[in-house]
Length: 300
Image 1 (spheres, rainbow, N blue to C red):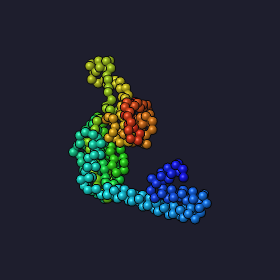
Image 2 (cartoon, one colour; image 1 turned 90 degrees about the vertical axis):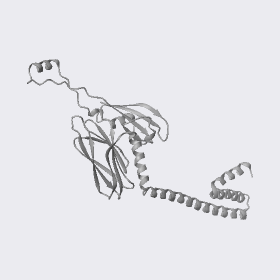
Image 3 (spheres, rainbow, N blue to C red; image 1 turned 180 degrees about the vertical axis):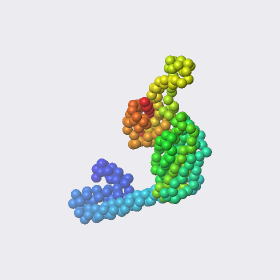
Image 4 (cartoon, rainbow, N blue to C red; image 1 turned 135 degrees about the vertical axis):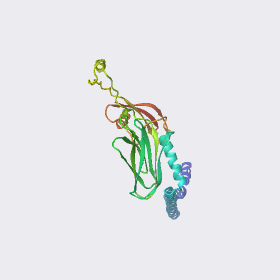
């Protein structure tokens, strides 16, 4: 028997019982080719038995691995209260960093289809982050019941949802109703709010009075000064792309996970309310599935 054949048979042994069966099958084939039919036939049946037994053992091992993973998933659906609290804290820190929490916080449990409303106080010209979560396998739906504020969703995973609510400066301070609904099953919920940086495009338009109008106003109080329209304000936002938001290279306004975004200009088009828009990469680093980038998006 040649050295190459011996090495090949030795390599089969690394595959366990299935590999041993294949090695025996090769030996049986060699015996048959050497016209030792009786011995070759016995070895061939022995090899077949080893392959069947080995395949069965592999199926059992695969099923055991799957069952272990399923039990871990099932256990995660009924975590103790302290684990649920840890999850909420870690998500909030990952999404909002060191943002200061407000007094609007509500948690508890309710039934499938039930709703709960929380009033979030938003001062004029300011913004608030909100974080609404339910314990899986339930899903959460959020509705902002206010026509004066400007709201947008930042992240929606099904079981938790985050967003930003802003109130333009011309509007007075108000309490915005945030309504949460549990979908799919009964369980626990949590709603909280955090202070957020204001949106630049919500600032009141600047006005200027022409000199002639100013002099006219000085002589008579019945004339209305002319107003020059302010130029369109450019808004700059930062977007992070990657697999894990915690690994982003710096502060950002939005996060796009691997596989959910296109080109930089396509991301810019999603971030801006209307054309023109432009996206420029200001930081890129490798890591995980698709690396990480900070994209500076200019709107307007």
